[in-house]
Length: 224
View 1 (tube, helix red, strand yellow):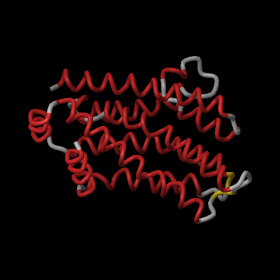
View 2: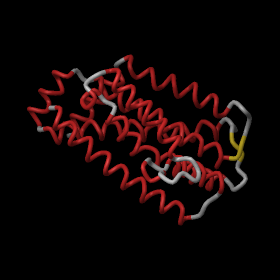
View 3: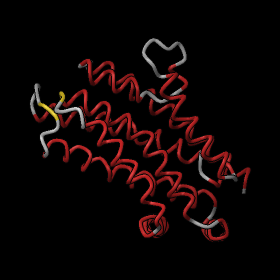
View 4: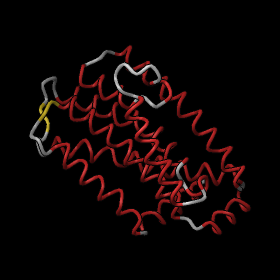
């Protein structure tokens, strides 16, 4: 399994495809922090929300780097479950690796203010970003070529999924349960919501991600 994960990550890093999400991240985070220093809770809430879309894109790119023929051979050699799991774990690791620089850079460059102290800022930042990673990986996996079979449909799933999260996850939406709680996490961070709201968001994220990953696994088997 470790070898499969390393192979996926190495292929992604060495490919020029990896530049797309990275350049997109530079643009998006440049816009987030271009308006001057803001409270860390607000900035990190917006940063976590942006990470969701960017990481879904990165996951799709990472999973699509491997040629179809190589993926089929790997599936035959190690089994469909291990092959699929390795891809998801590689995407999860790549996403988690983005969080430290996304938090450290604004703090080091004094792009955020710390009204509640450094510890509280780091805590809010870790929470909003970690909450976005698993569902973003799941959405990116659904948009990958192994499921959609075409570039156009993959882009539609990716962009449409992120758009639905923004629309359906808005404050007061009666169907917010249909999408991961990244919008809610950003609002909770800005409003200083307590542990109860964090627990609800965590449970929502776990259930949504579990359902999405289970559906992804079934779709891969069907398309094998």
